[in-house]
Image 1 (cartoon, rainbow, N blue to C red):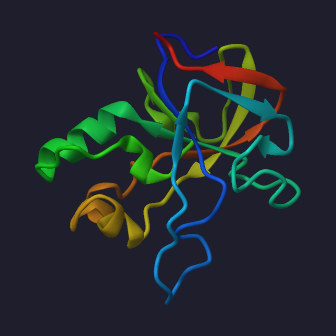
Image 2 (tube, rainbow, N blue to C red):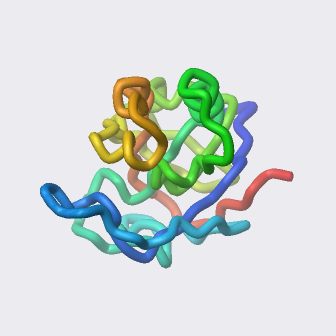
Amino acid sequence: MVCGVKIRHLYLSPGHNYFGHHGLPSGRHPAVEVAQIECVAGHGVKGDRFFDFKQNYNGQITFFSQEIFDALCAVLNLSGKSPGAARRNVVIEGVDLNSLIGAEFDIQGVKFHGMAHCAPCHWMDEAFAPGAEHFLQNRGGLRAQILTDGTLCVDK
């Protein structure tokens, strides 16, 4: 279990805005903030665009750091932006996400395997502001596989 972690936001998006859009305009599918998400082992997050995307996909669920989002807003002088603009499923605080790459971990009774860093792409400059892609290098989040079924809820 990862101690001291708090879930601050949860997001689902039914469609891709950036993935597969190279050379095309971004999509307009909203990242919908929800109070809970259903994690399905080996498949992904029910209702999300990557659910059953492909077998053994390393991004069945994605995590983003609240602390990194706050730092991004401070450095780029952003206000009124949502961490949902990063298009990650779970925004958490209290853990260095890079330390979970290659590790099995548990949050709210659901088990995950940290697979890879969520490398930011040029779309981050559109989603947040110019300079976001550069700022998020090596701190863009975590891609993980879901090992057990369960529900994640926003901590109050």
